Structure formats: C-alpha cells, structure tokens
Amino acid sequence: MDHRFHRMNIQLIYVHRIVVVHKWLDDRIDSIAKKQGLIVEVDFDVHNAKIHETRMKREWPFAPHSRFVYLWGMTNEKTVADKLLQANAVRLSVQQPFTWASGWKSPIYCDNRKVLSFPFIRDFVKSEMCNVIFEKFPEAALLAGVATAGIAWGAMAADQLKLPYIYVRPKPKEHGLGNQIEGFYEKGQKTVVIEDLVSTGKSSLQVVDVLKAQGLDVIGMVSIFTYGFPVSAEAFQKYGLRYESLTNYPALIELAVEKGIVNPSEQEILLKWRDDPANWKGVL
Image 1: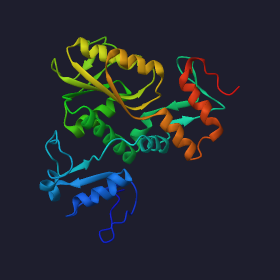
Image 2: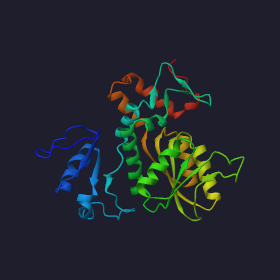
Image 3: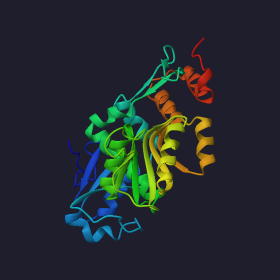
Image 4: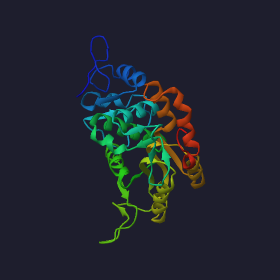
C-alpha cells in the first residue's frame, strides 16, 4: 500500500511511504523525510534535473532510475528498532529468559529474518542500510554479505546502490570449486561487510579475515542490530575496523519502555544483562 501526500494542505495521509511528484521537491522532502523520518520516493521522470540541485552534494553512485528512494539524513535508531518490534523480529522476556546456543541466558531473542516477510518494513530497513553505507563508506566498491542471514540484506543494498556483490560462507564448500566466497571480485576492492546481527563480533570478524586473505580491502561493516557487548567493541577496535549498526540494544530497550512493552522497573535489569551476558541469571 502506497501512502500519499495531500497536494493542497501538505498534510500526511498515512505514515510509511510517500511518492513525491511535485514542483516544490525540496519543500516536500523537508516536510516528510526530515521531520517525520520516513521513506520518500522521488520520481525521476519529473525531478531528474532538480535532483542535482538538492542538498545531497555527492554525485549519485549509480545511474538514475525512473524512481528511487530518497535517503535523508542518518539512521534513526529508535525508528529502526520500532520496525523490528512491528515485525516481531525481537522478543523480550525478563521473567522467562531465552537460552542461546552458547548456553547464555538472555532476556532478548532477535531474528531479523522475519523482517524479510514484511515488504514495507523490509524496504525501510534496506533504505536505512543504504543510507549508512552511502554516508559512512562513500568509497565502497563492493558489498559482502555474511551467510546466511546477511545475504539478503547485502544483495538488496548492493542492488539499490548499484554496487558489485559477493557473499561469504561459514566454511569452504566441500564440493565443486570449494569456494568460500561466492561472486566476482578483484584484489584491492574497498569492501563493506553486511551483517544482520552482531553479538560478540567473533563470527563477523572471521569473515573479515577470509576477505582480507583474498586481497580485499575491508573498510567497514554495517549491521541491522547489535547488542553492543563490551567484548564486541574491543574486538572491532583491535581490528581497527569501523562498524556501524542501524539500531542497538539500549535504543530498543528505551523504546520498549516508552511503548509499554517492558515495565520500567525491568529496564535496569535488561541493561545490566549487556554488561555481563555470560553470567546473567535473570530475575532471582
């Protein structure tokens, strides 16, 4: 379902996506994208000449299509967190914590694959990811998705930004050519790794090692969500690798309290889990 903008009184009819076809392009984008934090589609058939006069000073890293999602500003952490909650990709439970494969007890379970089943939420997250790549890594010449959850997001971002794309398997195939990296690449290409979720950072940084071993210049990593564990921050700092996430655990918890999903009395317990997840036992 597309959502439109009332031409006469500049009033938002429904909050999600707006297609802009109007002579006052900048005014409309200011009103919608900057103030509301929404996806705004610009029709290039109408605005192709005007696009070059917008506040986006860099040249577009792709050839214009008839319609492209206009990316405004930087990621709103709470907005992305809200989308994850809408898709039920994140579940919170202090009283009955989840058990991870590592054996850790956790008050949160995150499965961003669920977002793929909701077209408008998927489109929003994809656009936010492209925004971060475009703003933070303008020199990127290649995107690399992490199997399996990062493959779809990397492919969508590469398609929208018109960048080459590869993905990395957890281990080399045991048949055929035995590839661990799928797709075409050239040594020295500046590469951004795409993840859906970063916890300790161990598996994500192993992918970085694989790419570097093949001569690729890994300049950064972007994920949808991160828990923000201290061990993760230390690992990325040790690698000297820039890491960006669309949203994070503290932003999610703050939003969950605001929306009444989590009791305010549980907020401190939830935040303490992040400090020492291996030894967190939940509510005693």
